[in-house]
Image 1 (cartoon, rainbow, N blue to C red):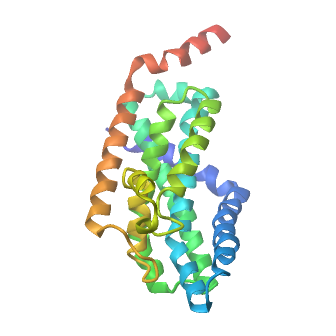
Image 2 (cartoon, rainbow, N blue to C red):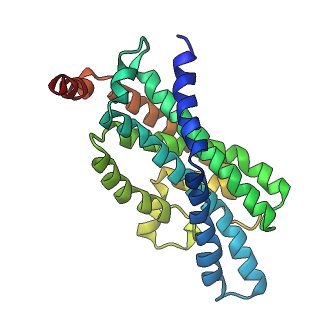
Image 3 (cartoon, helix red, strand yellow):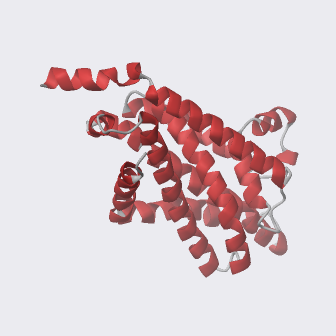
Length: 261
């Protein structure tokens, strides 16, 4: 297996990312709104030290949110390419179909990490974290990015159109984020919500990031977080590759092309 097709797909996605300056800028606006507006609003009900501590508590959550949105939106290109005919050209390339999924997920992971690193630079500049915490956040951010990309890939391979993907993502992304412990400690949630958090794989990515921030109270052990993220990512990627490799999934692509011809 030559890595040239993989490099071509990843290179194409990263080229689009860096050409879209507005996309990079807007990806920083969302976490900063949550951190400075929502965080400051909730923190205003606390005393001075508690307010600063709450803002630092939110750092893993907004970083995880950046990874989640970036990875899911990047995985959207799997559906976009099917809609606009690019996927047909990839399908006739002399590579196994699952390599297309893996290439897209690698690109989604890198895209998410680029945006996460930009956010870390901003957090350093405003003095909310120091360089030690920033460096400690990078490894768990990478593992969380892989898990988020695998979520996006799993949704994308079961989505037939862009509209399907948008509906599923909007229904999926907010419960996954809000019920992850990103904005509050899991231990303080009602029992029924705590059980939902426990089955949410994104919760373990948020918690893994919390281990790097002293002010953020983690809810699980670091080894539990790592094990859940690795197992979930492996299973999700495996299902996505299996689904994408089925011939029946791609027949409509070539039928549409035949009708247009």
